[in-house]
Image (cartoon, rainbow, N blue to C red; front, side, top):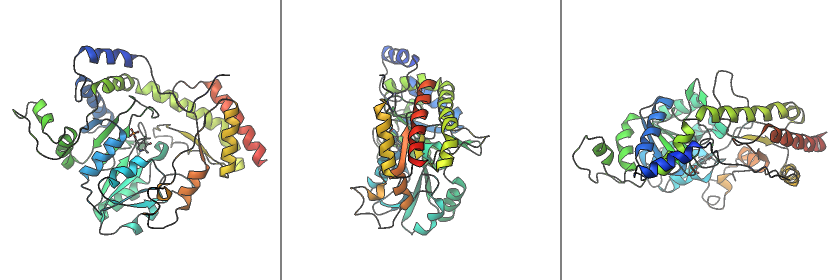
Amino acid sequence: MSIIPFNKPTFLGPEASYIQDAIQSSHISGNGPYTKKCHDFFRSYFKIEHCLLTPSGTAALEMCALLADIQFNDEVILPSFTFSSTANAFVLRGARLRFVDSRADHPNMDCSLIEELITEKTKAICAVHYGGTPCDLETLSQICEKYKLCLIEDAAHAINSTFIKKQLGTFGALGAFSFHETKNITCGEGGLLLVNDHKLAGRAEILWEKGTNRTRFNRGEIDKYQWVDFGGSYTLSDLNAAYLWGQLENIETIQRKRNEIWQKYYDGLHELCRRVEVGIPPHRHSCEMASAHLFYLIVGSEEERNLLIAELLKQNIHAVFHYQALHASPYYINKHDGRDLPNAMKFSTRLLRLPLFNSLTGSEVDKIVEIVSRVLMQVHI
Ligand SMILES: *Cc1c(COP(=O)(O)O)cnc(C)c1O
């Protein structure tokens, strides 16, 4: 019986010939010809001026923490229900984390709970657009303006998602994307930093190139490059950028396919799920684009989730759950301020992700829908 894995990294074909080409061009380190192609693409795709490829989404978030000038004991507000990378970026700077609970109806953070967490130490808010569904960006922007906070968007799930027809990742001062093999667009490991606040652009470039002004030197603006600030090795190898380019050229095809699969899950499950009160992701607003990054169920209990995982596994289908609520993680539980975050715990114990990747076939989706429906009817009806 064939296995349906949870994920298969997208590979279309041209990626391999671009890597071959990069090898032949003798520029395989960072900031090479393929990085430039990708940067040009993103500039027009996001309609922004400053973007930088990074070795991972994690690295892009670390750059955000540096550019937001997070210092020891500063406070950063972020959701508890997210990947550890969102939090690590700030913890590495010595920040205290103030975790926000999820909404009752969605894993995104409940932005109505943010204002009461703000103190004079608060420096930044990092929002995660879970599954590419926008957080309440109006409230977030208002709060950040009122308290002079840096808004950072962890848009790792959110490529090709819009709010009021504007791409997610372009609302905050900084936006971070991931091209990890589990994400919509991939190059194995990779990421992207959008620098939407022009004031941060010069420093971002320096930070990116190990604290030197080499990027300006490459543009012919200065006659030698020097160490001018702190920095890191935050460029992406051009071998990875070459793979990425093969995907960016086909981003519309990739997204069309993902949206088709997502829609098939939605059509197959939404009636039943509504009847038995199992949660599924919200449908995008008709005028907006959606990343269709993931399709999930929010079932009644952890036992029900275990049963679903087991029943799917019997048919060689791998469904997974994710995000241990970070406030209750082994690393942070004793550092957390003690507030209960019941919705984050709910999603942590009851959310199940179904396979969703580019080469998943329609009949495979049918099979998954059939098994999920059978188990949900057994449990609930
Ligand atoms: C994938 C992911 C990251 C990290 O991206 P990497 O490229 O794997 O470092 C950060 N935040 C969220 C929400 C993610 O899903």
